[in-house]
Length: 461
Image (cartoon, rainbow, N blue to C red; front, side, top):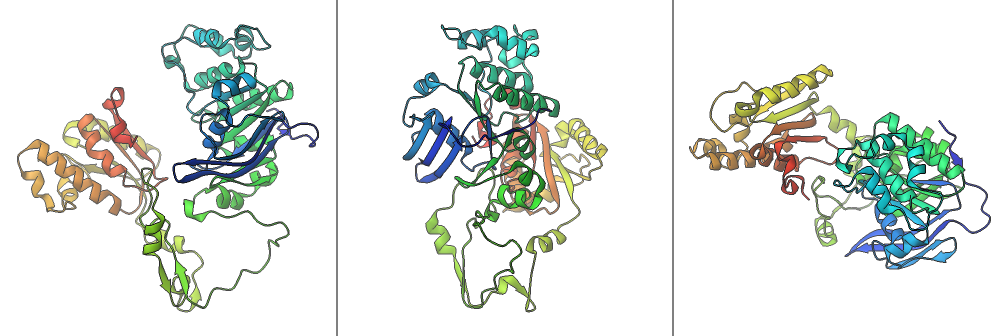
């Protein structure tokens, strides 16, 4: 693998300089006073979902308005300019999700993007750099693999002959061998000196391989800029700043310079303590922000720090106590066994073959016994009116009742590692409301024949 690029000494005009950047979505402060400098070469910015990374990219490209701050390209102010003008000034953008035209072939994508004045990058050079695209030149965008689509998205941006390439999650969803290829390509491009690259990544391994140092973004701010080797080798730092294995409320602020890492912890408070719950209910992927007024109204004052002690001694890890109370972990496979029993059992067997425990949950409403680990009657008991809705004789009423019952039943189950379901439009509508009640980070997979239709109602779009 090519060596990562170290940022050169700070002399000359930076390729990109962001100062005091603020971006709002309504009342939500998405980007908060960001200061970031890319002198040349490659700079990686890492952070979890929702930290403001994509919004920062869009602000650079003029795709979202900024409320204040400065964005300079080679010393020239570009904040507030139209996206087309930003592109003409020399910034290429590879957005998250690739955004290709399904109906255009590879070659048509490249010809559309080629400027009238030929520069260093031409379709012919693209085909030399990406031989796979040359082989697929007559295939449509929708016929390409994920890796091929990313190659095409990068190629499309390069045909603008940019001085700066802004890439949002370029390795998302790619196979490891393709990830390595993309890494080496980007490093090679920057080494040639024709283009500088700002890479937005969640993959710490990719980010630390591609640049040194790496910037870390937390809650809309650049928390720190750190040596790649330090970040790659410090698992605890990754957890605290990037949330590996933690929830969003476990954020850690930047450590002030000069703070002794081995210093004794501050003594526990002995007086009244005001407790605020940023998420009164465990957040899901579809949760809306909790109004500040509600958080304030639900805050409470403790006369003594009872939450931090047990029998007069500090409790060091609350999460470990909670995990000990959970049942033995398993993967849940749920669906209507009376209509999709063969498919659901096939999925269950695949999961078992990986050495994982499973639990087959039957959500049938026909009244026929299908042999699941959990029967429809057990699930139906979670309905506010019990299982009576399933015996109404009306299929529509029974399905609606099972949907409500499963939505109430699923979040109460302990030990669930993830949930998989399969079915048609009816089963999709039955299962997905319950999936949306599960916390962020818990895998949820719905295999549905509705994939060719409008699935927005099922994924919360």
